[in-house]
Length: 296
Image 1: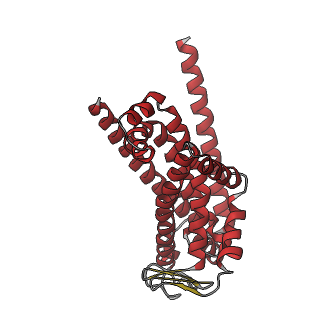
Image 2 (image 1 turned 90 degrees about the vertical axis):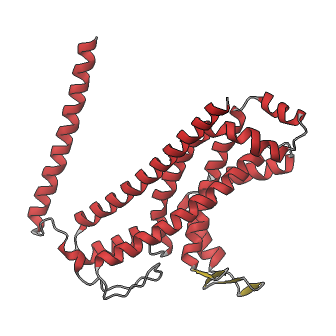
Image 3 (image 1 turned 135 degrees about the vertical axis):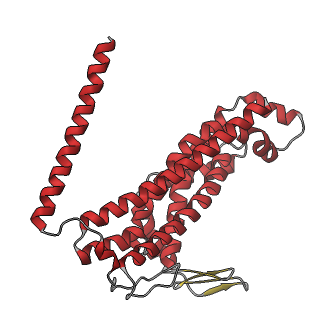
């Protein structure tokens, strides 16, 4: 039996190595046919295209490398804000789905059921073309101003494209997080609910102090997957004209013809981002488990 397992593992490894060799061979053949070779010297040449939104100063005379860096920062901006807002929305909706209030349960259930049935691309197009481009100029106090040119919030000027992508990612991912939170809450023994009620704690306080901390070990692994999905789904921002890393890479590849190098840079960037997210969540999960063990 042991020898059989070893043979299976060797066979699988041989197949994987064969596929890798085939891919490398195809890559080499295609590079020879194009006559371009494999190189990254073009990153220092002027990009020659403008970006509608930049986190740092940028002009078309700047290099392709700087354009990709600005696009990368734009991606980080929408992904970071989306992770925070989707978590808050998902936790609130998940808690509402486990609430004893029938109205809250119905509203949260309707939100989850509707959002999970509609593709994210359609939702992004809705938020961009219907919701934000249709905004009339309307100041809301001295700190917030809405218009179809963007949103001014507490001194920040947020473009329509950024807002559409952020809201779309938040609402879409929040629905999946809500189901994860609901499942984690339901995994906590009902005796814990009865315990905090017997102590006179309200539903909201008991949920935050007693139930959610115990539900975290069941929530975090699936939550990590949703965070990774949000980061990957952010590439759909190209559909509404947001200048994220994918959009800048697409323009760069079109102009330079360096598809292989462009896709390698894109691949490396998202692998690095996903490793950071996974590593951060793994560290947080270990801290939560350690704290629970100490409390016992």
